Length: 624
Image 1 (tube, rainbow, N blue to C red):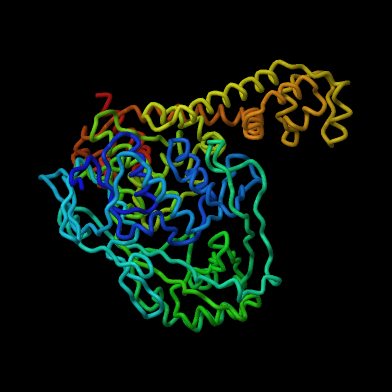
Image 2: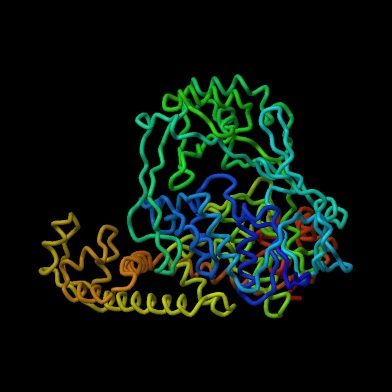
């Protein structure tokens, strides 16, 4: 047994798994410590990956050489591309996963990753040499030394579960909480607080009348998470089901509000605004008579279902009575009730953009410990922390993704610049450059970066090169090929599109929203012959070319805007000012700039409370 490592990762959730595998694949001797080796990458809440903006993060993780997209594809029991009725900047992939197989697949990856070992135990103490972390100590009394430590503790730090007035210490149901580290870090000057999250009731499908529910099937097309063509969906695909609450359901819930930990003072911490409990919904939206619920399978063969939209910490009997008021659930049997959980997190403005803490060298935080919520947000932080911990150990420039490069960049910049006042969840609306950060082009944005790091395989790099060559070939053809009006107008009239008055380049026709490459290739033989040469990943490549053509104007405009802001990213101001002494700054700006000590002028401008006038003052001082 080795007791000396380059990197120790504490916690084997979604952040910890990505961090550990990334660090090990880069060549660092890595130890992953987890309380339970049978709960690796456990899907603590809903058995799904992706969704609005979250799906983009998963594709980015895959493009960087991470594992979440591969595991999600291999264990998917339903795939859907959300927001297809909107533009491609909003398209978001999502899978329903087999919860058990997801965890098993992740464990297989970890056990077969070179340079990566596991240890089942609970870390109770960090070891330091002055302001540098040097290792960890566990409940068993074992000490491990390391050059860097990554904390990915999830909801386990002083975790407390609530079901009505019942309180149970734990990080998840039937799993113990972790104690000691919060207090140790607080003594070192770290700012910490409490957050709350929750999970819904689990239902036995044999007690559900599915004839009273609306079926929601998945997509059956080429889309998936991983860019690697060998990663396919092999499990039996299953439907989700839609139900609705009613006034009768709401009345049953209201009867239990006096015993709700959220409303009787039992829970004091910050809860998620964007994924509220059912009791919060009926109070906040008191005029609404119905809320949509999604009944989602937990696996390929299991009878266990997850009731999305019915997160609750109400007493068991209240939850059950309310459920039985819904016709499809009148005879419902549940496996376990919904519950809320409170846990410790640390103010993420105490982090560098690399996710290394400012107070302690070589100590990294990733995941819910930083105030985020969601598997995808955690995994995105995990891979960045793993990469930068490796760089700290072996040398190299810090790896930071900017806001115009990735949703992961938006996520981390939001955390370190703005902090959190509720569990942070990613949305497309948080990104200024959505048309640049599409789910279809994550490989084009990030795979070359992963190649430079050493995380992208030769296969992945060659796949990207061949894809880009074919996309460019198609766009080049459309740019130069002319179409005569008399040869195409009958086709245009047939599909309800305006006829041409004169000949145009094919590119101009393809900018029309309802005309795609595959459709017009039926009438343009040279185009059809070109598309027929695309035999590898045909649908993906043609879709990518279509998007590039149709949205080229928007893409160029956003790129210009991003480039202007990037110039401010190059103006570094970290440790250059004593902000308290600059009286021409507003009081709030002096306080916020001192607290965060931003790296660049651009980051300073994104701090809440720092005005454009404050930025002008700093630019003038820099000029002097």
